[in-house]
Length: 249
Ligand code: NDP
Image (cartoon, rainbow, N blue to C red; front, side, top):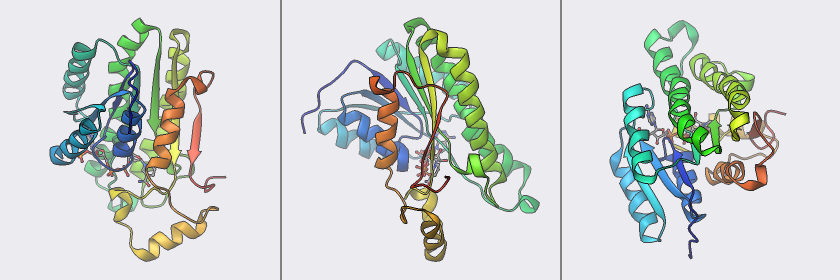
């Protein structure tokens, strides 16, 4: 496939697996220079980087723990030093630690909030300075429909995802005057390692509730990310778009 490069630099956190890997791949084929981050799994990141580089894409992976201010600072400093700009950030890194509230430990709560919500805060803060001086930028937060609807067994996760919606709307208002657009995608049931933990019965129960009667592939989220990065969405900011087969209607 012929890849036509453009000069835009996009960072995708948690780009080594699942939805993040699909976003990295999709953007790389569109010609963006993509920096994916991984936390604990360099082998998976390397596989994607090698495959895409062989196709002629501009893809780099760096280690970054989004829950650590130091790690985030070093990661973004490295990218700005190498490329001199950051045009887009996709806050995708996320984890679950599901259990009922009565069994949920403080650690379960802190781990999920630190990765999902504090991570998005730290990374948004790190890109806001270069984007403000460029007078342009796009930030896309990957929330979840459970951030809108809640879900039994996920008080930590759904709180973190609801928090990302507040983060999106506040940041959209703070950064609009600098032409930085901030939007949120709320996926429904997507086939990744995260949902692989579900058994067959749970999968069927989920799919039965979805108007489109199926789960989604990660690339069906990636295509919406590319829309939010493109000129086609130049008048949209502070919005939450559910990509869920109609589940959250
Ligand atoms: P996966 O579990 O498949 O992948 C998670 C990714 O996040 C990995 O690349 C992982 O890197 C990275 N990651 C985890 N912790 C950290 C950390 N502390 N710092 C940096 N990176 C980290 O998840 P999905 O692809 O399923 O989910 C991606 C996003 O989409 C998440 O935010 C999730 O909440 C959201 N989402 C997913 C849905 C689904 O149905 N799958 C539905 C709704 C929302 P490594 O492997 O190196 O640790």
